[in-house]
Image 1 (cartoon, rainbow, N blue to C red):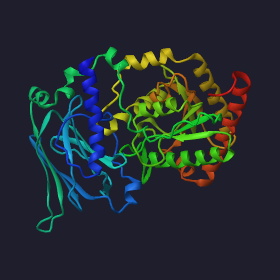
Image 2 (image 1 turned 30 degrees about the vertical axis):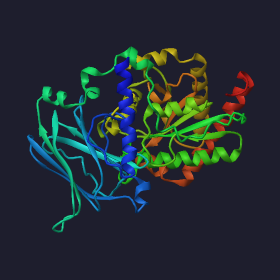
Image 3 (image 1 turned 60 degrees about the vertical axis):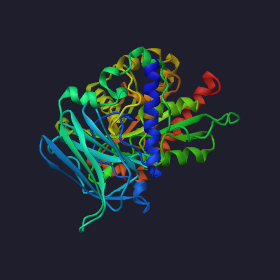
Image 4 (image 1 turned 90 degrees about the vertical axis):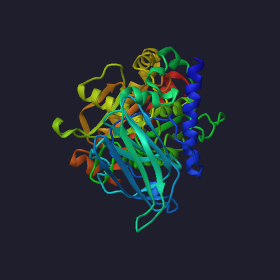
Length: 441
């Protein structure tokens, strides 16, 4: 347990170090960190694009072969950075200050040498990250920033070299070596420093209005699904903000957003926000896409949590969404599946009942104003829905892979109708809950 505690302290320090980089504080390369690993395209920060004081990355490229591979990032000024490898799967993570990524579409998606792909984006205010998915164990042979010279801009350069598994593991800091990962019993009792919830205002205990948490999915380095220049993270953020404004306008409820800008928020932190704020309802907003091989689908879908998915599509979606933490390269809350199953088993029956009740009310209201999926009510093991004491639903407001749905998702008129139906469902839910179950939390 003592080793586990030291491990967690080291992880927490990693996040603080990323924040320090934004202030120009240099740090030496080390291994430790913040969210897990997954597939996603590159993400560019909207907030960074509107802030000219952030460094600009204008180009990125790979060179070399499966023995030695070089990465070069063109910048408009020198920056501090730290780079470190991770195991299982093999990755290299580079933490840098917040950067305005102005890279060509598709940058990072092609394999070259030791690098299968790389992604980049904002992971927290003031901090960006580049994550490389490697073909196997590597070492960072060289890493440095070059001054502008001979017509070339300042450049961040990383050289990767192939090594064997034993050498790779031995090169990792003890806290990051695979054989030292915590046991299940230790994972259940550990406390992870929460950097994303620290800025939340304290709950006003004198305000008896029900508190609703709105959770726009994805953000920062995690684009979610994408169609052309439309990304899920931006579509659902716009929807979530409109929903917040409409709810607050009624004056009946308090509202907290898990994110109100283009910031990466780990899945477990989203749940912690709801629980720490004693939320009476948690609504996660997403916009799904189907791979082409799976055909076409359309319409809104409402999900509640279950340890067994209602169908194969629900199971696929939950698996994809549950990998979102992995998008930022490192996992602070690497809970084993067994722990998640225990949380499901311990979930209060009353909470599940309220979640299902709200889902049905929401479906009844939305079907009169927006197009619904042919099977609009589903269940699956979404991590963001696993708070045992907060009624929670995940709403897929449409499919970005469907042309008709995408036209709706970018339409302000459609959004106003959808938001209105959701607010009506919220009103009905709380009027019935207050009448049957006493005052909301």
